[in-house]
Amino acid sequence: MKMDNTLHRRTVLRAGVGLALAAGVTPAFAGIAHADPARDRLAQVRPGPVSANGWPIERAPDAGGSVWTREIEGTGLLVATAIGDARTVLTHVIRRYHYEIATLKPGEVIGFRPYDRLPRGYQTNHASGTAIDIRPNAFPEGTRGGFLQSELTVIHSILDDSHGVLSWAGDRSDEAHFHIAVGPDDPRLPALAAELRHYRY
Image (cartoon, one colour):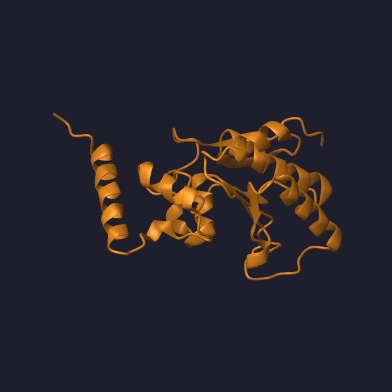
């Protein structure tokens, strides 16, 4: 009888995480930009590693998981993100940026990135499809001051309207990066997504 290796690996992983936490050791995949007890609880009950914001890490877009590559309506851009409410919020960021800051070209928005190619911390959110980088070549990580004041006003308007669901890494000298700042079970996410579905661009 063939053993379910996936289930076995997940069981071992959960047990290993529990032992590591009990010993005071933080697993490598648990690098987190900000402490979030709700996310920590989520990480304990979901199988496999999670990104810094508590979402399950995916293998690749369109591989049977929750990350799909789809066109961002009205822009002609193809971006791989988590489906559902997270995509609604990230799509809103891309569209407002496209219409109010700079017209985006194909290849200028990066969504999903493989976990093993990412530094730890908030960057791991790409591996769950809950983060985007907009024009990363124009705004390389480690530099600041790339936006005009009028453009910053738009970015802060987007953040203010998100009610804490969205985070921008501009304060970490990573002005291209936006990510979902709450876990998949946070009620603020579907509430914001429902609100954004009626937004007029």
